[in-house]
Length: 463
Image 1 (cartoon, one colour):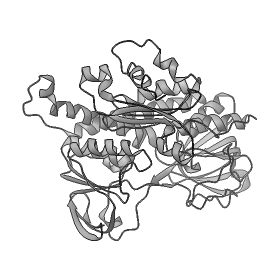
Image 2 (cartoon, helix red, strand yellow):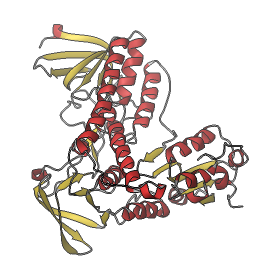
Image 3 (cartoon, helix red, strand yellow):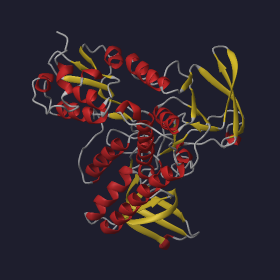
Image 4 (cartoon, one colour):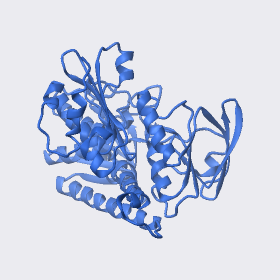
């Protein structure tokens, strides 16, 4: 392909995740000639195969849990069944709607959406093998790499041959697994474990750590463990899978070293939730003069600039925290810098929610982090049963706690309880505004609401 065949753009984006698609719509609307190269999923992983469809399925599982608890609410339960094909169709319908919205946004913004496999063949120059078999060559004055990550399949004998599920295939199940074995006790593993258990599967989680949620405080890990154990999920911690036999979807057998002895764990399905790998291999980064870290993430500075001039990286492939809302913030950083600004990622807030039922959410420091950094704090903690709204809906499991510094500022908030993500949002706004905790303690909130429970929390701040 000759130089005359190169199509020139002001901005070329490789990958259509949150950072990439938002940047394309924004810059194209401002008059920049913009192209987005996407291999498969219009809009990236979140609306297609990750956060949004998983929460759709998780909500179906929550509805199923209400049927299981119906007598608690004075409703007799008769024979009822779960139709996983309908669960899947509900999820697919939502995803199709998201894809349509994305396509409209590309069209209305004037962005060229190019479906195909892209790789650098020279600095700022990307060759795209289109899905129809043809090839295009694009060159951009400015480039964003937004290729994301994919599920890690550990190098365990027999694992690859067992055709294990990742989160992608797990969301496409149209039957209920008899016994689902999950390798990995992180957020993805825990969310799927509870959902599939509520649909009727036996579920066993195998993890190398000594406890689930190892980065969180001990009371959080214990609360999540007790919650899921009470629902019948089995845990094998401190365990190393040494061999896998069989085929996921039919019959699988895992040989596991646990506390110095070998165990055999048998099930029908195997889900891998053991971490993520950046999508940097095979895309020609060396030809683009874009360096990577020892863990194969793209090396960026606080402005998300790579080692190549006028080339940025955003989202998970840049090593950003693996949340869609952080990728969206990466968009703001890159968009500002493309236009001559000086935005940085340094010091930004990283809120997150684990969408178990009830949810777990945190903003700011945990107790563990505060102690590791030598940051003094006062603690306020209250059981979720102290929240009147929680009592009215029968969702009293969990607790809230906050860390307060010497200037009465909230420096950390954790909540395991119903609507945890929404409660965290109220705290985050207070933290952004630098309000003292007393502003929430003395506020007049509507009764009975979840946010009213913050009063019960902050009247317990230690002196």
